[in-house]
Structures are given as C-alpha cells and as structure tokens.
Length: 171
Image 1: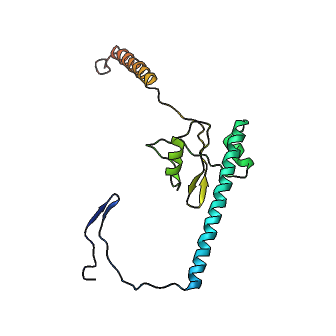
Image 2: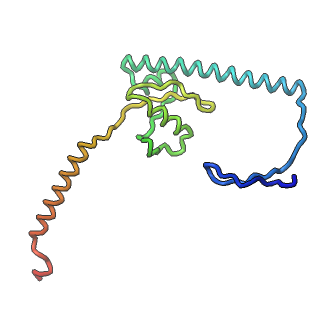
Image 3: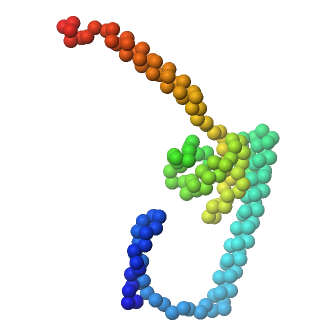
C-alpha cells in the first residue's frame, strides 16, 4: 500500500489512474456455498443451452415459412415471437437510438441478402434473429446524370433571370 495509485494508463476509451482501495485476505468458501454456486451455474448453463436450441428451431421455422411465401413478420408472429422493425440504417448512420443490440444487429444485417434470415445471435439473455427486408444501393452513374440535369436547370434558370429588367433601373 506504499503506492496506492497506478501509473497513467491510456486506453481506447480514455486515460485512467487506478487506486488500490483495500487488500483483503482470501476467503475459503464452505462446501455448501461452493455446491450451491456450482448448481446455479449448471442450471444457468442448461437453461441457456435450451434457449439456444429453441431459438435455432425458431430460426429454421421462420426460414421455411418465408420460403412458403410468408413475410418475416408473419412467420415470427405465427410462432409467438416478437418481430421488431427498425428504421433504415447504414454502417455510418445508426438511428436505432437506445437499442442495446444495435451493434449485433448491424453486423448480422451487413452479411445478409434481402429476404434472408440470420443464424441465431446470442446476446446477453436474449436470442436474436435478424432479417433484411431490402437493401438500397447507391447508383453513382444515376447520381452523375442527375447532377448534370440539375446543373443545366440551374444554368437555364439563371439565364432567364438575367433577361429580366433590373428593378433598380426601372424606378
């Protein structure tokens, strides 16, 4: 405890100095406490595995329903799942606000073709299945054509205004 402060640490989210607040002697858990902790961890692991298995089954059923002509939303609703539509987004613009799974959703959506369903994404205590309804592509050639047309319209408009009499000179 002679030097309770660490050296200056620079990390990706900022600079830090750590302080050692206290030193405690290690505690030996009782057998019953260790047994209860292990039982809880095993139950949690089994519950997570069962949830993953159920989510994988749902993903297959959704994909089959889509092949049969149902939309993603209709298929999810028929299975009793919550389908949550999100606004359009891109890798640079994420209007998902406070959606805690925004990063996971954007990564999965980036790998999907429209109409396809993602593999099950395990996120904290939830399982996500992502679907891309449509993908809007950027047409550089059409943009150049539009720019040329707009520039010509502006030029024509400015030529028309040049032929109007100057208001100051007519007074």
